[in-house]
Every structure is written in structure tokens, then in C-alpha cells.
Length: 227
Image: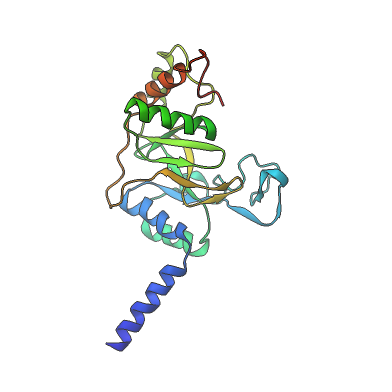
């Protein structure tokens, strides 16, 4: 009995000591069936002045330090538990990269200031949202998977969409909490509800319609989501 209790205590201590990325990556891959892979991460030393720490990739002018796939590449993203455990055992602080599209969530992202305004306006409108990922520079609203063809038809039907919007669909990626990247900490602005079921996601059309309406509602006739 004493030996069993000792093993349990050691297991609890190991779990407590390991970085939060390990458990978060496992939840994404196994409980939610979201394909993930480790991001390139940040360099061990040296900074980038007002742009934060440098990227571990070979590009000294990397525009998204730490927040992109490199080795392995994006096509390696998986929901396989053994692979995810191996990756984050060997690289425990690696950022968590979600491969968007297919059966995985997609996303619409905005600059952080516009994202905060958008969420406040969508709440006022009564729009039901899914999880929202926040970095110091951009906020991303997760949506149900869509194809590039569906997105193209949707955008073609619009007279105008906010120029600050980015779309993360098939063949894309998104950094997930609790990663740390060159611009700072990645967090949930709207966290998934606790539990093992995959988080509910709204359709891209409903979210885009609401964002366009929110942007057009600026009292001076301008766009709330321009920056």
C-alpha cells in the first residue's frame, strides 16, 4: 500500500511540474480531436527590441516569432496521443499549433483592439460565440470548419468586409493557449466550457454577418473594426 501511495504521489508531482502546454495539447488532440503540432517556439537568448523575443527559426526577420510550424511542418499535425505525448515530452514549452480546416475548427481574427470592440458589440447583439483566442496583437474567433470554396462564395456575396479581418481556414494554422510567442502570452478570452466534449462552434457565415453589422454600426459612419 505504501508503495502504491508513493507512486501516486510521484505521478502527481510530475504532472504538477510539467508545463501547461503538455496537458492542453493532449486535451486538444484526444478529447476534442483537433489536430495539433508543436510550433517553432522562441530562441533561448537575445531579444528583438520592442518586438519581443526572437523566433527559433532561421529567419532573423520572422514576422510571427515562435507562432508558426517549422520542424515538424504543418502536415504533421495529428490527434494521435502517442505522437503528441512524444512531442511535448521532448519540447515541453513548445507553442500549440492548431491545423485549421478539414474537420478542425477554422477562425476569423482581428487586431486586438478591434477584437475587443467586436466582442463587446456581438455580446450587445446577442450573438452566440464559441471559444476566442487572444494574443497581445490579435484576437481569433473560432468557427465551424469551412472550405475555401464556401468562404469564396460567402465573401463574393458581401459588398464589403472589414479589411482588418483574416481568415484561418484549410491549410492554415492558429496558435492556441497557453502558448508563449514573441508577442507575449496566448490566452483564452472566451474559454471552452469544461468537459471532454469538443467545444461548440458557430458557423462562419453567422459570425461574419455579425462582424460586418457590428463594423457598420459605428456612429460616425466609419468602421469599428478598422484597427
